[in-house]
Image (cartoon, rainbow, N blue to C red):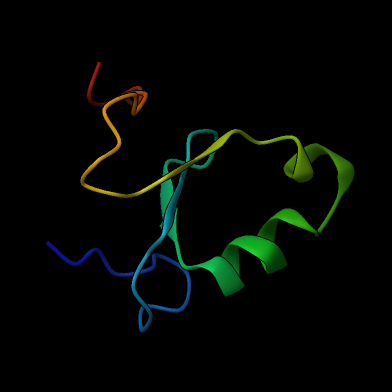
Length: 61
């Protein structure tokens, strides 16, 4: 399953930002989380079918 980046809406999402509840491609992840010190501390996890330790967002809990 291909998940589209929530920021650019073009590239395939590679990470999930738990704080923003957003799926991001690597380029957008770097841009968004380089914006300030607070954003750079957001926990991000890889979006891959082999990842079994994915945290759930507030909506999914």
